[in-house]
Image (cartoon, rainbow, N blue to C red; front, side, top):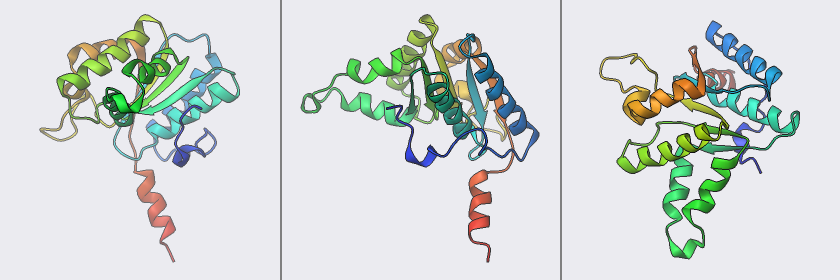
Length: 197
C-alpha cells in the first residue's frame, strides 16, 4: 500500500552501512527524526550524487513510521508520479488527476524520490508547486531526495534551484531539514563485490 518498490523492500536503518562521515550524520538525523516523530514539524531533503543511500534512508524512515508508529505513508518516484498524472487525462484510464494526487496530498508522510529528475517544463514546475504548496499549507511531512545539489560540483552543472525554480527551492528551506550526503556509490561497491572471484 505504501508503494515501496521491491528493490527497496530490504531498506532499513540496520542495513544502511555508512562509508563516509556525511552518511553517518544522515543516518543519525533519520534516527533522531524517528525518535521525535510525531512531534516533528519539518521533513527532510536528502541531497547527493547517485548511489550514496538517499533513497535507502528515505524508505527506512517511511517503513518505520508505518510499521512502528502506525501512521500511513506513501512512496513515489517523482518521474513515475508525473507519468501517472499525465496519463490521468485520458478518458480510457477511468481516473482523473485528482484521483492520482489525492493520496500524495493526503498522506501523513510522503517520500518523493528523485525531485528535479524531470526536465523543468512549465507543467512540471506547476505540478510540483501544487504538491509542495498543498503539503506545506496542510503541514504534512515530506521527505525528498534529489541528485541535484545547491552548489554545482562541476562548472555548468545544474543545481536543484535550476531544476525546480527559486520559489519552490525557497519553500523547501522552510519545509525540510537539508541533509547533504557524500561518499562512494554503494551500487559500484556492490558490483565490485559481486564480481570478485
